[in-house]
Length: 237
Image (cartoon, rainbow, N blue to C red):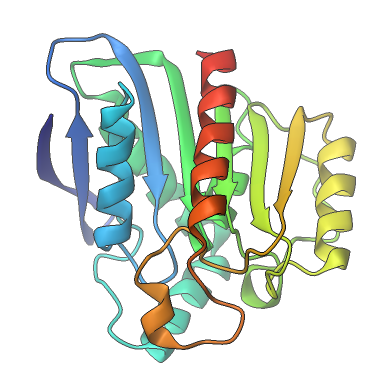
């Protein structure tokens, strides 16, 4: 496996992402990794390496140009982009262009995965009809500053999968119903996987140290949701 940082810019914003790819020339499918609300961290780098271990070239993009060191900073960065959808899209698709530009990547076989805030990012990217074959959102935020819209007339191109803990406080029943309504209205091919005993950020082994109610690592769900992602990728690739 080969890994390296890649610096790039969007407008006047300097960003640095993380590439992980298997040894060998390819071509192979590429997977974009969209980070949680605190920014590009070891969690996203680990997921990129895990994807490379599955045979994909993975690029963990950078949406902020910095990594938050406090919850307040993370919320300010997240809300700033959620309130500016054109800029959010610019930064997300700039990361995808970095992935597509890698010599070992087949640009006709691309997917994106997102975690927490990154889940909202990949759901926005799904509104592009041609860029991606699939998007998978792990424990995405669906309330508060990352709440789903009441209506979205844009069609959905890729297959969509949500992997959510049944005890996730950021995905209430009303948000699950709204997601289904939006996907059905868009004519999407979608799945919503719900896992008992799991809360928010169930893929992040470091989250327990924060001692936040409703946020907890859950190893069984981490394994099961990864397996469900692999099944979807096997289908689309």
